[in-house]
Image (cartoon, rainbow, N blue to C red):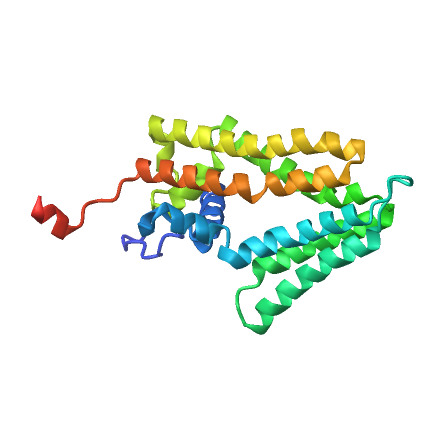
Length: 253
C-alpha cells in the first residue's frame, strides 16, 4: 500500500439551486440598476428601473393606444369596436420601439419582450374576436409572479432575499438573521399583494367585457404602482445594509 499523498485536486463544489436562482435574480436586478451597493439615490434607482422616458413610453403607449382606439371606435348599439385597428396600432407601436432600439444598437431585450407579449395578446384576441382577451397574458403573468413571490415567502426563501443576498455578496446568509428574514418575508408579501390586487380589480372587468375600464385600470395599476414599490423596496434594503463609512469620512469623525 503506497504512503504517497493523494494529489488529486478536490472536485469544485456544485452551486445549490438557491445560489443559481439568487444569481439569476440578482443579475437581473443589477442590469435594471437595482444594486444597493452602488450608493445611488432612490430617484435615480427608480428612474433606471422603469427605463427612463423611453421605458415609460414603451411600457405605456401600446396599451394606451389600444384603449383609445377601442373607445373611439366602440359602437354602443353592437357593443363592439374595431378590434383589428386597435390591435394593429398597439402592435405597430411595439414594433417601432423595438426597431428603433435595434437601429441604435441599444439593448432591446425589454422592447423585444414587450413586443412578444403584445403580439401574443393580440393574436389571442384576434383568434377569439374578443377585445378583453387581449389582457389574458397579463393575467397569467400576474398569477405567475404573485404566486412565486407568495410561495417563496411562505417557505422562508423570499425571492427578494435571494436577489439581495447575491447583490450584497452574502448568498443565503441572510436566512440566519431573523430581522432580515422578517423584512424579506414582508417585502415578498407586499409585491405578491400588488399582483393579487391587479387580478382582484381587473378580472371582474374582464368577465363584464368592459374593455375600456379594463385597459384604463391596467395602465393605472402598472407603472404608477410599480415605481413607488420599487422605491420602498430600495429604501428598506438600504436600511438593512447601511454602507460602511469611507476612510476619509471615518478619519474626519
